[in-house]
Picture (tube, rainbow, N blue to C red):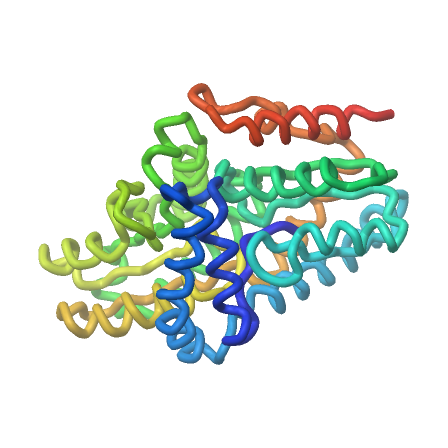
Length: 353
C-alpha cells in the first residue's frame, strides 16, 4: 500500500521533509541536493508545531495499516484462491520506506505482489514516484526478485470510492441548517501539483475531475461545487485556484456556508487535520466571517470503501490486467529518464507467465 507517508512523531519530521524536498519527481529545485536539505531544516520547527496541534504526529501509518488489515480480512473470504493475503505499508518519505518494505516482503517469501497506490488519482509526482522508487530499488539490488508483480496505479472512478464520498458528504450536509443546506458550496480540495508537471501531460487534474463529477452525479447534483487545490510549496506556479483563496473569494461574495471535501486523500493526515480543519475551516473561517465551513471526512475505515479496496485487489489478481496500459505510457512531453526506465521495468515484470 503505497503513499507519501508522514512522520509519526516530531523526531521524524526533519528526515521526512528532507526526503520530500530531495525528490525531483515532486519538486524541482536548482542545486537540489544542497537546497533541499536547507529548506527542510528551515521548515522543520514550524511543521513540528503543526503536528503537535494534531496530536504530535501523522496518523497516516495507523490508518493505512488498519485499512490494509481490514481489506485482507475481506480478501481472504471473497478470493480464497489467492489467499492468504497480507498487507504491507510502503511510504515514499517516511517510515516504513518503500525500499525497506520491499526487503521485508522478499524475506517473508511473498510470491505475488500488488503495488497498490493509495492515491486514487494518478500523477507522476505521487503514484509515479512510488513506482519509480520500486524500480530503482530493484535496479540496485544484487539478487533478482522472485515475486510476480501486479499494479493498481489509479482508481479514480471506482464505484465504492464514489459511494463512500457521496455518503460522507450527505451526512455532513445534514449538519447545516435546512434553510441554507441546498446552497452550501462543495469545494473538492485536492493536493496541488506544479504547473510544469501539468504541461508535460500529467493526467492528475482530469482524474480528480472525473471523481468529482461522479460524486456529484451520485448526489443528484444537489449543490453547487468547484475543484480547488491545496498545499502548494515554493514560488513556482502550481494548479489554481488555491483552496485558501477560493474560500476567501466565496465568503466575500456572500457564499458563507462551505463544505470542504478532501477528494484526493483516503485517510486523515496533516493536510486534512491541520490545513483544512484548523487553518482554513476554523482560523480563516473566523477571520473572514464565514457562517460555517465544514469538512467531509476521508474514507478511512468506511465499510463500503474497505470492501472496494478488497474488490480492486481481487479483480487485479483474478481478472487482470496485471498492469494498466495507461501506466506504461509516458506523458507526451516527459523528459524524465527514470520515469521511462521504471515503465519499461514494470512492463517486463508484469508480463511474466
